Amino acid sequence: MTLHVNIEKKLFHKQLRFDHGFTHLITGIQGVSGAGKTTILKVIAGLTQCDAGAIYFNETVWLDTKCCYHYPTQKRNVWFVMQQTALFPKMSVEENILFSQNMQWSKKRSPQVPPKQLSFFLDALEIAEYANESVERLSGGQQQRVALARALMSQPELLLLDEPFNGLDDVTHTKVMFFLKQFIEAQRIQTILVSHSKAELSFMTNEIVQI
Image 1 (cartoon, helix red, strand yellow):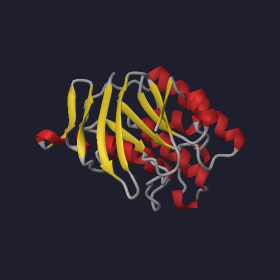
Image 2: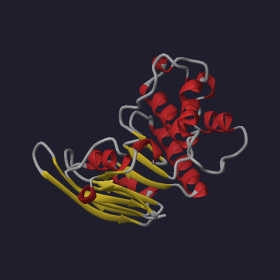
Image 3: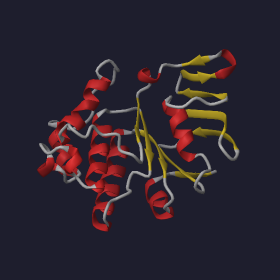
Image 4: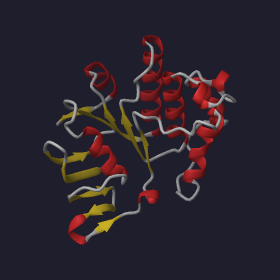
């Protein structure tokens, strides 16, 4: 899979210019706070408009400002795990995870995850005991794992991760990193990871882009 991003966007304090061809399975993006890392992910996901540029994913044009073309956000088989988990606070852990299935129902992608998907992710991310709990009762780290489970359940072709390990204790952090990398590699999900941690980027990614 190939993703090519060439965009420009005016930020509060600078002009963001980013041009990169993503050819590796897992690419890391690193930079100082305010450099525009999260903005890049939002533009790729179709959640934020850029001032100029183009985005191509495989054979599909996702964005071309010269032609005033914007591929509908809901048709992009992409999932974005934000720093703010964007979970539904009144819904249970299980309901939040299964919500991704409702979002993806019209996107054609063959099932590739193991049988009993929900149980698999609940167990792998060690949140099975909270399956029926409202997510608003969970800690930040537990909510982060729910957000990751929901993203992986959606079986995206492109996975965008913005500081996905925030709020995890050291032991859980290591377990989740190992699981996430193994799953991404097994399912061949093209992934972009934003992180301030050199250790995370070194372990998780095949290349690191500095902005």
